[in-house]
Length: 196
Image (cartoon, rainbow, N blue to C red):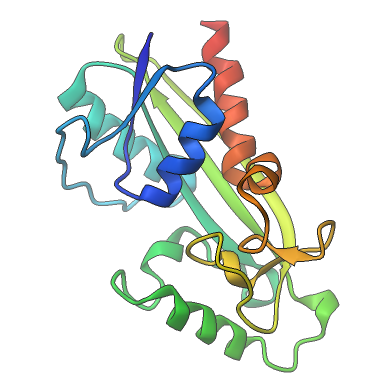
């Protein structure tokens, strides 16, 4: 398998994916680059279900190896919200600056030790022969008190990683790919695909 199609249109994700999978797949295309358009409804109850919904839809059109991910931010104090609804929290077209500000507002007065959170990522693979694989990984951290950093996207500016003393938006691309939920999940998937 020389190439893989990743079921996303998110350029930030594609940069991370290419950096991590480049040594395994010479050609990594987004759906758009592969000329595939699907209108999928992510109505799964888990990250794995949503990732499979996307991967299956693109695989049906592509007929080759397709990967898809679903990820989210889980804040313990908020009952693991926004969770699988992270992308749709406060509306799909709502800028993340507004989503981040709202989450910080909801944690007002909450002490640091109770601001625990994690990014979770599930990756699904649908192979040309119809076999399916899913993996999951996470990164633990805390929700900060303000947005910091400009290297990431989404909730990165409010997700503080104690071991680095920075938010994931303040990490370099290399640092982030080493510790991020997506980086860990992509490496797990890479190992699973090598076994085939």
